Image (cartoon, rainbow, N blue to C red; front, side, top):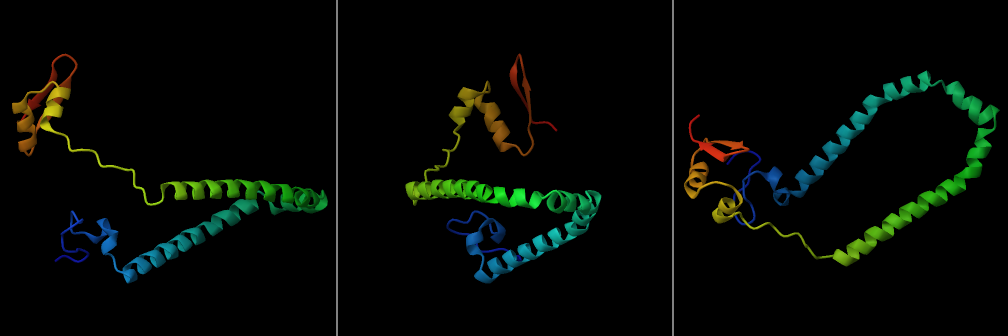
Length: 158
């Protein structure tokens, strides 16, 4: 058995663990999560020089001028409760909506798989004969040309 594979059976259609997370051990899941977190931290750390450069470009003096000299800090602190109230209202609304949907659809999986397409359905839908359809499905390589006038032309030659 290949590294990273699992025995096929039951709900498993292939033998790769990456396609069936239910087969992953707890240690493998935690290791994967920890590595993902570590690389996200590294990714953000790599942006620090560009953020610093942008800060220099926008000049920190502008912040000092607006917030300290012109008393922008007082205006900010005056608007902070309104900003916080709007933020909490939006967060609460979204939270209640999520809770409502969770309780409403809890345990109900309404997604149904589509039925398999039958040959008769394809023959009715497409201007193609049953022999051409069998040819397309059985050959390894088929060329299908869709034209405006004639419909579908099937060629089994490469």
